[in-house]
Length: 176
Image (cartoon, rainbow, N blue to C red; front, top):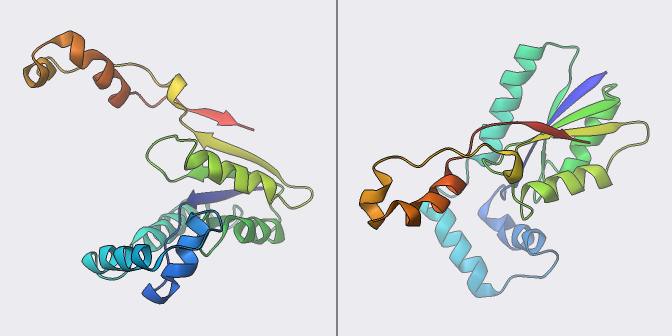
C-alpha cells in the first residue's frame, strides 16, 4: 500500500520551545542567549508562532480527503514535531509499504530538501520503501527573461543568467 509523507522544516510549538528548536536547527549546537532572544522577537512579530505546521497539517488533511481512506497521509518535520521519523512509523503502522515523500519547500536545495530526504531515508522502517517527488534545479526548464528585465539593469546580458535561474519551469522527477 502507498502512503504519502508531506515534509517541511518545522517550527517550535511555543516560544518556550525556541532553545530546543534552535539546537535542532543548528545540528545539536546550543544557540546563544542573543540568538534565542532574536528569534523570539522575530516570532513575536508574526504573532508568536509560525503557521508552517498548521498549514502543512491542513494540506495533509485535504490530501487525505482527496485520496480516501486507503492511502494514509502523514506530516513530518525535520526540525520539530511531528518528526519525519515518527511520521514514517505512523505510515508503516497504517500498512504503507511504499512512501511517497513530498517536500513542501518551494525550491530544491541541499540545505533544506535534501536534508528532508536524508532524514526520511535514514528513518525508514523495515519493509518500507521511499520515493520523493522533487524539482531539482538542473532539471528545470529555462525560460527567457521578461522583455522588461533589461529596464532594471540596462542590458539583457546582465539579466539573462539571473532571470534564467529564477524563472524555471516545473519539470518533476522522482528520486528513489
